[in-house]
Length: 138
Image (tube, rainbow, N blue to C red):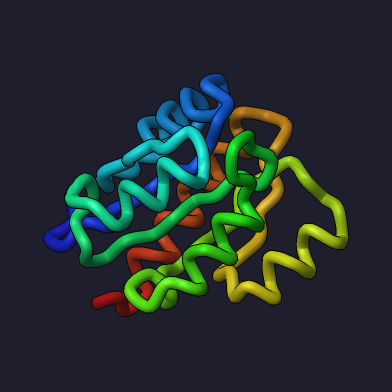
């Protein structure tokens, strides 16, 4: 594990997708801690509480969720003085142009489509991990 691990919060309501992310992390040798919230409300509670260390955090966000969807979550995070600068990467099946525009208007760090094959999913998680480990984060 890296000297300063990246604390990753996966906001995802689909248990199969959560399992795929966990398996992809294992296969790609991503050793950063992975925390999971099943919707935006739970994620905000986790980020504001003591569940996830406050340093070196990254959110992987699905858009299509019950209770509070991804765009609503982004609006809440960007409106919160303590969470506003939190890096968020959208990881979704939505290829809808409106979702992309809304997400980028809310300052996401990236918008990634979930790959169809597991091998491509592993490659995507490995690339994402490598990128964030190279980026200077406090």
